Image (cartoon, rainbow, N blue to C red; front, top):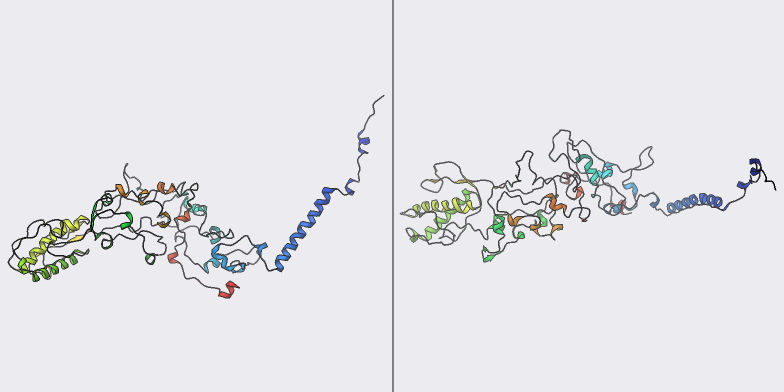
Length: 440
C-alpha cells in the first residue's frame, strides 16, 4: 500500500485554533489568585486600620529602651516634605540623649540610625556592628593629622593591635618589654607567699586582700568596675606599721617628711617630759620596731639635747630604712637647716619622689571585673612571678582572645570595650513629652 504524504498544511489543520477560548484549570487558578490575594491584603489592611493597629507599617518591634512609646511611631518618625518614608532624624535622638561627637577632629560623623539599628526586637541599641567602627579605624584619618590611637585597628580577633599598656614603641630593642612607670618598690611574689608575718601571726594574702572594686557610691560614670586604689592606711598599715622608736607606742604618719618630723618631735618631747629618767639610759634591744637604730645616740645632758639627738637618730632610721623600704627619697640640699621648735641645727629633710602609680591602664577602653569574677586573678595577671615594680601585670590581647571570640560566645565586637560617645560630657536632655503623651 503506498504511503501517505503529510504536508505541513495538512498537519496544521489538526490544531484547534479556539483552544484559548475554553477554560483551563491552571489558567483559572492563576486568574483567581491574582484577584483574591490583593483583595485579601486590602481587606486585612482595612481591618487593621479600623482597629487602630499600625503593625502593617512597622518594621518590627522596637528596642527595650523605646518600648515606652508603644505604637506611637510619630514620637520619633517625622514626616518630611516630598518623602514617602518618615525617617528618624538625629535631632529626634538628641532630644532625649544629646551626647557630643566622637572626637572633635573626626573627618566623618555617621547618623544615629546608621549605627543604632531599631526594630530588631528587645536588644541593646549600643550593640552596634564592628563595621561601623572599622569604616574609619581601618585607616584612621583626622582633620589635624594627629592620632592618639593606632592608625589601623581591625576586628578584635583579626587586626586589633596589642593593648597600649604592653605595646612597645617603634624601634624598641629586641627582647625589650613594656615597663610600669611607678616609682615604688614592691614585690608581688613575696606578698603571695603562704607564710607571711602578719599582725596576728603567719598569714596568707589573697589578691582580693588589697585589690577591691570601689563601692557603688564611689563609682564614676564610664569607669566600669575598675579596682580601687591600694592605699597604705587601708592595705599596708596592718603589717607595715611605721614604728619609729622602741620606747614609744606610736607610729609615724604616712605623710610628707615635714609632717613626720613634726609628729616625731612632739612624741619625743611628751615622752621625755613624763619619763625624765630615760635620759642617759641605754635603749632596749629590739623593742616595738623590728631593727635597732643604725648607730647609738650621742651622750646628752638634758631633755632638750635628748629630744634633739633622739630626733636625729630616729629620722636616720626612718629615711634610710623604714620609708626607703618602699619609697625613693632624695636629699633636697646639702648642709644643715634650722627648723622651728629646735634650738640647734639638724640635717635637711629629704624629698619623697612621687610614686606615679597608674590609676587607669587602658584609658581608651573600659573594663568591668564583675563579669570576669569566675576566673582566678592570676590566670590573667601574672603576679605570682613578678618581683619588680616595673613588671606590667596587665593581660595581653592574646589572653582576652581566648574567651572573646565568636566560637566561645563572649562578646568581641568593638562596643564591648569601647565607647563612641563621651557621656560624661553629654548635654542635658530636652524633655518634649509629658506622662499622658507617653502612656496614652
